[in-house]
Length: 242
Image (cartoon, helix red, strand yellow):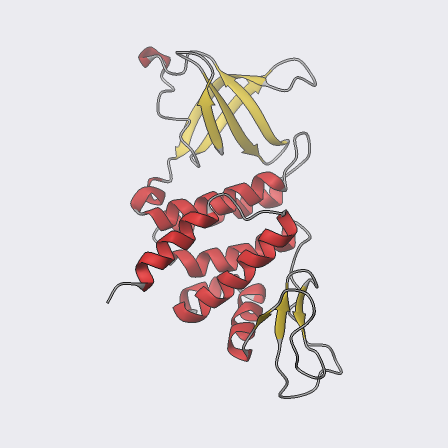
């Protein structure tokens, strides 16, 4: 379940991600009635088995039956988990247009939501998940040094240039760019190749990497994911603590 909103006093419209037909909008008639048996099943980010149908080509299908598989209740443990879930769910929806198979992104989202719900380190898992998700969307940033790159030269990360930039003179590129240290680059490369290593990543480097990927997402999506600001506000308060 990705999103839901009221349709009438007793009915909802839900937006769901499916492995077979991408994202779909469903009219859940009478779901808010206590006797419906579906009250509380269609929660955001819950894993649900659905039966639905309707006229071919209709913008919205009818929900006939739903069964809860996993509520992902651990996601509500804190605001950071909710924000990270929102970022990942938005990317999955963007990459799963209606009527097309979305099996890879569906499994990617399910796996990462389950890990977050089970208590995985939020920011390091989010970083590893973003690198994998960007690859699935065809937007993986370039993290490889050019073969002729000079040694001991300043490296930059430029969203407009697609990732890593290594000017021969070490100067800042003309387009917006942020300096990237060898350690930060190493963390990005490691998690790109071995996402399961997120549990051992240093938090300080993870934060630097998330800043870089946040700017990359902002540029290529023409806006940051809607939940990204929640992560930023949380980080600001955390960093001000003694």
